[in-house]
Amino acid sequence: TGHLVFATLHTNSAAQSIHRIVDSFPPAQQSQIRAQLSGSLLGIVSQRLIPRIKGGLIPATEVMISTPATANLIRENKIHELPLVIETSAEMGMISLNRSLANLVKMKEISLENALNYSLNPAELKMLVR
Image (tube, rainbow, N blue to C red; front, side, top):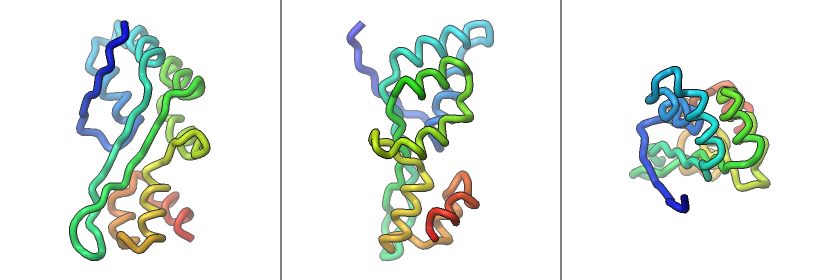
């Protein structure tokens, strides 16, 4: 209807945000909610504040932009597949949390130890920082 809504959720990833939204509705309505969400969602930005090597905090971000692929995964309740689509869609402006963490490690903004502590998939992160 032309409304733009910004919301904040206490989640660690785009996939967790989708789950949180859908799970806030009764099970009988969740399929309809996924369909509506897949058609109206523009994107999700998730951030974690990571301690910097030089002091202070720096955000590591995950960005998921709505595409036909992400919308289909949401609609079909294949939300667990979103991280792979995010990781492989950098050319569309998406970035995974692990890719963001790896970039911060390579720029010497954060330590590998802190990156691994904040990662949702430390094994994958280790491969990205090599």
